[in-house]
Amino acid sequence: MPTILGQNQYGKAENRVVKITRDGDTHHIKDLNVSVALSGDMEEVHYSGSNANVLPTDTTKNTVYAFAKEYGIESAEQFGIHLARHFVTSQEPIHRARIRIEEYAWERIATSDGNSKFIGADEVKHSFVRQGQETRTTEITYDGTSWQVISGLKDLVVMNSTNSEFWGYVKDKYTTLKEAYDRILATQVAAQWRYNWTSDEERMPNWEKSYAQARKHMLQAFAETYSLSLQQTLYQMGSRIINSRSEIDEIRFSLPNKHHFLVDLEPFGLKNDNEVYFAADRPYGLIEATVLRDGVEPRIPVDMTNL
Ligand SMILES: O=c1[nH]c(=O)c2[nH]c(=O)[nH]c2[nH]1
Image 1 (tube, rainbow, N blue to C red):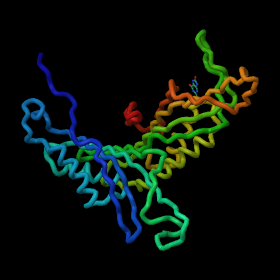
Image 2 (image 1 turned 30 degrees about the vertical axis):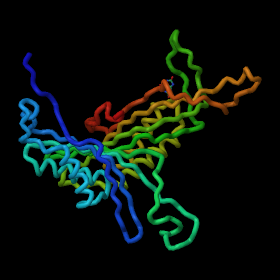
Image 3 (image 1 turned 90 degrees about the horizontal axis):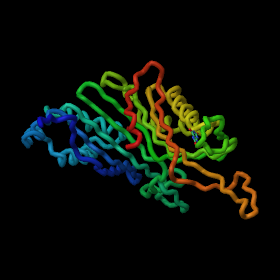
């Protein structure tokens, strides 16, 4: 049976790089997990085993560490842009680079004594605790001409202990769900948003500020929406970001509904007045949707948020 090679890419996945920037005694941390995927003229290595066009994955790993030193890590996006540009412009057979980065956040440990180790109020200069909240993500793709930057976050767990209802839904012979007029709404947000920056000719967004603002608007919309369904809340979260951040054109969410079921306490002669819940981990409702600026084409792959 004749065969041909289809889509292919290669590179080193999950390069864990920690960069300490020393500003006198005050240190700053960037902690990344960087995955490189390159594609281009790679038919021969698959067909005949000729490695003539293959930059070793080991070299791509080394480049990640060398660039941390040479360029520093200003933001995950900026770092990914340096790497993607380097692979595509320095190696003729490589036509496209995709750099995926997860970023783990660290915060300073506040201590109580007042000695010289302190920055400002009471933040120690070189001791950190890993933030237990979300993981920041970015994916940079470059083909030598245009850029696509899709950033976001995953594992951001949020809960509203009221202001959520769910009723008026379709009922068939298998429906047993009771209508809820005051329920818990909880989810673990995975969100990916696409920047409309695509060319070196355009002014690049401020990646750090944009991330902080997108996250803030998303959380505020979650908290401030009186919810009749998780779908409605999702749409509010997305449109709040699109309406307040002109550099973002599209956002896709994957929101598991982390169900909290009221426990029946009647067998114990107790009344459960919306106080005691069973937090189920599975199965969970899974609500997914894209919110777009009117008139733009959707480009975020449907399953990207589940990676
Ligand atoms: O917010 C919700 N959306 C649904 O589609 C749904 N379905 C369900 O059983 N519970 C919920 N909750």
